[in-house]
Length: 379
Ligand code: GLU
Image (cartoon, rainbow, N blue to C red; front, side, top):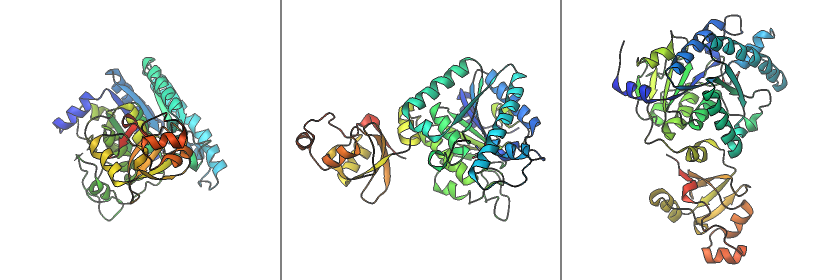
């Protein structure tokens, strides 16, 4: 067994784990679910939980299992049939996990979510409270996208992204993605050769992303590239990510034992607070502000609030309290923030000094359009 100190440090110190499992890991030869694998996973998750850690599971596999249960050999190309398959598969999936967990004295708790649940601050906080209560009850949250009602506008894209958002919600220091790939390889497995797995990526930058190529898994929706993009949401918020094979022998217990399995992507910088994670990395912006160079400099280097005078243009419609993207004159999005004014008000006050804001609106409810405590400069 190979050990390394960086791993030991990440694994031993992480008290909350989010584990994501892909469809291809769970699929059985007959097109339904590999129950033995699910029970092994449940056993490992319970072993991690027995150390006092909080573990949440994000599991795909509903659509795939549903297709198998319905005896469909071909994936339907229309949404209602796919959503029906997801409904059939999800109940089978959660039953399999529940059976697995109950052997070790824990219950499975089903959470089906859409992106809208993460955009809305009250729903987001409710979700966090519910998860906290579930951990108290020693239950294992089993989370999936609410496929039966999800349409493009409210979709996550794929479950790798959902898992990253759950990790940020829980401020989990560790996200483990169990896929069919053994980790990030030196050459794209989709291309000619199989490269060696890279054990450690200190900085998940564009060069690392380039190694992923455009490969896509056969059954699931994501490929290595989408995994890395999701992993970045976590590393930027101050968590670490391990991508490893879910088909290998006991991946979770081996990670817990400090073994160097898969690729570890290290957190970038300090852990960000929960509220800033939500503003900068989770909620989807409703509109956009274009700001001038001076304002950009003040936000980036001065840790300052955004004032009306620095805003040159407002795009889209939003209300007070919504999240907006902040772009520079070249259109580059470099920050996000929770705005104090609606789009209508913002259009009336853009470019104005505070005394002119008073004239334009008849009052100045907020000196700043976005307060620095509600503003996140993106990495
Ligand atoms: N929610 C889908 C399912 O359970 C999977 C989405 C994904 O793998 O990204 O079938």
